[in-house]
View 1 (cartoon, rainbow, N blue to C red):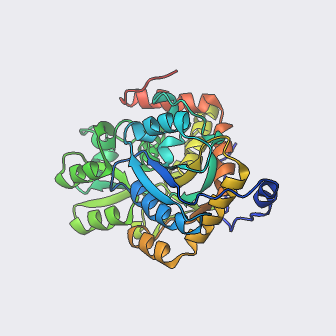
View 2 (cartoon, one colour; view 1 turned 60 degrees about the horizontal axis):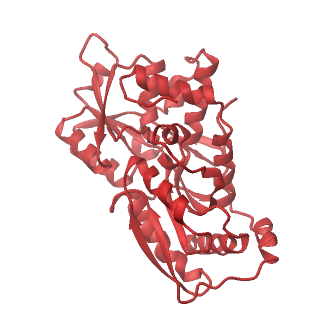
View 3 (cartoon, rainbow, N blue to C red; view 1 turned 90 degrees about the vertical axis):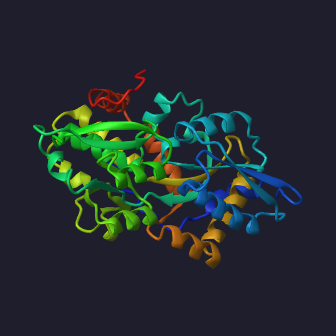
Length: 352
């Protein structure tokens, strides 16, 4: 089984619209939508969710208001555990999420109580390629196990998109790495890299990339790559840094290890998403999907988001649903390999 390659094309709404046509229109006039964001204020997911939400309400039936609630913790899993248990399928509850809330490996270790494939997705963004930034002084040590390990700083102990590069580098490429989990936010990790508190970490936002490169203290060892128009591509702002899948090609001999790698290649495509609770009527989902498409045509939303991140293509509802179903179908042996490999590399995990 090879990693999926999705083409993020303009969504055809005919099927959803047809299903919704038989249901009465639901107006949200005079009502307030609660949008739950499982990350801290100022986080990239938070910024996207707030900008998107303010544009969504312009096109939802009844011109409702929207408030935002931040519930950080366990890569956003704590927030979705609560949201999926309490959110009613009436159009008044929305979740804005990221990759760590969809990753089956993270869900098993963080005791998730929800099934992502049951959500009614609205749309989101494809994850941009993330760079693995490393101090220039530390780069030679990455390939020399006779020297002290290169320290890899991460938020909590969850495998975010860019972190998979280090998992594969240590597993298949012989990288000399020691993981340092437990940071509270991406901003904290960035500060730790700049200060030399840790040697490296992975970053995907244009702001972080530009800032770190401007320090002159770091270089980019590799990048995660991003699937655009069906092809794994590099990111121009990361220079000539190789894509990790190119580095690993031909070096994975075990079938289960390949399943794990394929799962990783799929899950790193998940960027950010907006979704409604399970059992939300099709008519409500259709209204949200139309509002999402309208938001992406809204110059104010597009221009404001591009100032933060100009490199993430749109992921439409159908794209997200296809990707989530593929992740659900991933062999459990591959996921167990990921967890056991993390443990071999010294990251504490709860293997089930």
